Length: 507
Image (tube, helix red, strand yellow):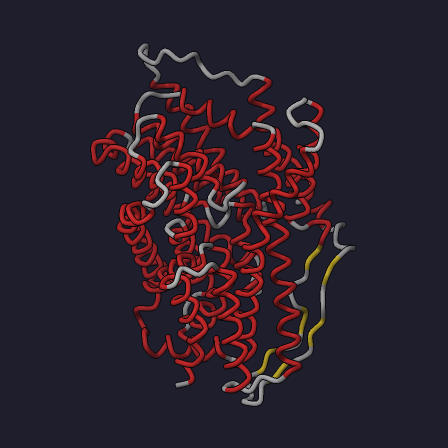
């Protein structure tokens, strides 16, 4: 009975979001309220415990939102200056092969956009390009949605990976290697899915080697950046290297029939890329150990006492999430945004007053989802401190047993599908997955890699993201058709990660 009651807040969110189509903010508030009630009445949580749990939740939320807000701000600066449109106009001119167009635009370019923006941007930007090139509108939405799925965890300047660290209190050194390997394998699978969506099995056979080369460039680059401590730009680096590899492959295959003039790395194209070049440069400078260790003087941290429920469940004393403001990924993003804005103003690409417009659009876009994240984080922290997460973990361990490794990525996918975000999935389910792994005796990094990879793959079929893609591709009102087209591929991809998880734990 306790396990069932502990699960009710999660079940309520599922019902509200999937059945009644509530957004994350409304459903998260309802889940938070129910978790609070059950924590008090059933699990014996007192006022002090709940009050301090909410302070912890605010710190965790701030840690994630600093990245999300500033990542979108950088995207808006580059979009307002016309840089995204310039890149969008350039890439389709490179090849006339439809399969290669899908790989370049719907896989590599969409992954690059996920690395710098996320939040539905990859599909919103690339779907109209694919429609213009002759792709069916449903395929034009499905291709980039599934194509960039592998890059979600380390995309958006790794906000989902930051949430994974925050929710589990495990370091990037522990989490990055397994997560990056799982995502690299998912990258290869996404490439074959894109080729199949573009032109069936003939496209898969024709571009099989190209996909392998591009996936190695993308997944390998992301892995190297993630495990070397530069995980904030791992998704960006992976997408960039995929674009470079794809452009080189396309250039080597260009025939006389391709009448478009060659693409030149001229001043305008370099200017369009300058925001992301600045981001890489600032990240390399500020993540350098000699600089990084000197930037710890300005921090937000709170020491919490040991907390115990009336039923005896104890949370040890210690700091909550410590936020070092000067070296935070969000600060690097803010610095990059400011520099890029100054550069574009100097170049005449942004007019007077554009800064205010960019800030207002960022606030308008991010405020509703930010409140939803706060509610979901608060619910997760309450459940963790009340012993509800522990109770669910014990129930899963008894009920699922040896099948748990295969089920773990599906839990992550379910969380992302119901909340519309891998970040939210990691917030809601990462602690549960960690405790279940510990109870069963499984490797926590591998299970959490399955959680975030499953969440990344499942996030692209979330109704909120599908709506964004269909709106720009002229498919408003046909979201069901797109979901139907993508569902089978997504289940296969998540199932592949389930098998990979099982195999990784067996060796």
